Length: 247
Image 1: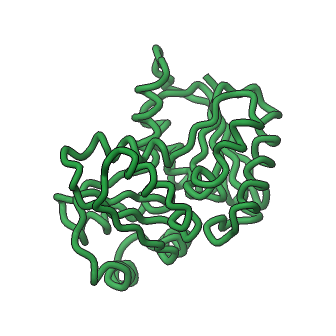
Image 2: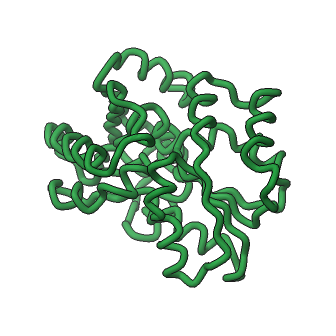
């Protein structure tokens, strides 16, 4: 199977990493809209327009599936992408909601949702979880974490200060939804701050769980073909991919 992975920039590489670890696809085509990143501060109509343009880009390839790694796009533009595409389009928000349900035994569990301003304002995670009868929900936009990851600052004093800035008034959750694909790179810092009892919901792992439950992958792909494209400075994206993915 050949899959396209779309993200507003580099964060979706964490989803690619999960796909590689589980050896699901023979070919992976990654497209990052690095010329117009970040999406998290943009309005709904702009996000939809950019997302449809990404579908047009992927029509240059004969894809079996498109994975929307960007949470903001998954929250606002998934239906429009599905309508425009000639193959299934799957977003990380729905996968993350279902992964949260599978990770928790009690409906009264305390769930904290993190994301960009766009993702949090969409209430996509909250609505999805409420439909599954989860009610004890907190959602918080944490855009500073995106900047830290972009600067490759994953731990240390600045990260600790940012954690304290955002969370010093919040109770520790039973589950923490990392609703931005940058955030798994800070997973160790999140876990250390909230404690080992807090379950982290990772978009990459969630999408793999969803795919394995929904589709048949009879053969593991040990040597997948990888191609990386970007709307601006693709070589920089390839260098980051090489570093983060060890490819």
